[in-house]
Length: 384
Ligand SMILES: *Cc1c(COP(=O)(O)O)cnc(C)c1O
Image (tube, rainbow, N blue to C red; front, side, top):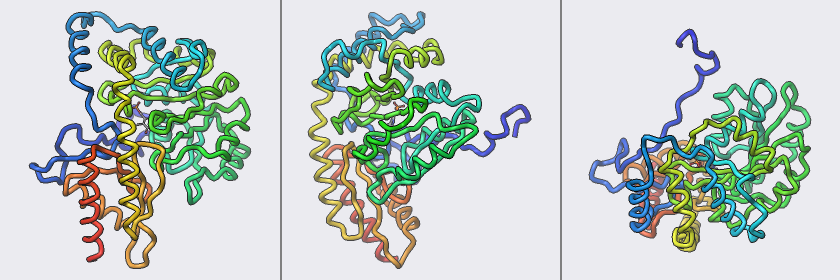
């Protein structure tokens, strides 16, 4: 360990990104890889939008100049989209309710810096959930309090309430929930909603709506009455811009002003700002693929449910979560690992997570391959 480095960092490992090209370790080089492990859209931007962006890059972006550090144009476009998609009058959300980040990951870090840093607070998460909350908190030296979930993946609200009441020095200052959750794909239940509404205003509630376009359910309309809530969104999923790293959050202008204080001045490259703006201008076209994804999801869940060895959950997102049903003959974790490796060797990358597999809904062709390869992997498993 380098002597000048914070001692608590010794225990961390760097985030392992998934293969960025059509290559992955342990896969035959000629195999077409289906990347169904990070919940991106299977569809690149349509060529006419790429051409438009190429024109913007050529003619409008001066690469010798810093980007627009105020993000006003993008924030106004986001506000319009948020109002429209939540059926709100056009005046409800304005640029003052929005902050944009280099992916929502950056916003998560800003929220942690603004609420819990310096020994002032802990965060609460219910596992399994999106891993970045705990990872980013830990890199900032912020303690993470963890509670579990019930069989249907609803948060163990009793345990969560006990944690809120009993955690001291420092107390819980931020609660992270995902609506719908990753990796388990379930939206917040009535009981979970009642619980986050009941939390004291000294606690920041972060509601991550990364999958809003698939669930079509948002808590944005409630933000007006909730000064301690912040809603996170991203362009990385339904809007097909994962490569360009754009996320945003919605909150009361007073909280937004604080997040603007802690962010880096030029956090978004000009090209990313332009791409997000163009994506919003063309939202009708880009979001046209959503019904197909939902249809494919239903087919995938239906087909997976035919396997007597699999436990499959409903999904309000663009991915499905499956586990192996308990079976005396082999360890579930070992079996899931074998299936994961088998899928990878045949060219389908999925995420192995919390004793199950999280499978992104891809193109119809990819989903057909997923089912075939999974079937083969399950047959293989039965030979053990
Ligand atoms: C994919 C995802 C995000 C998006 O992160 P970006 O940094 O915007 O790419 C955020 N939250 C959850 C729960 C996700 O699954």
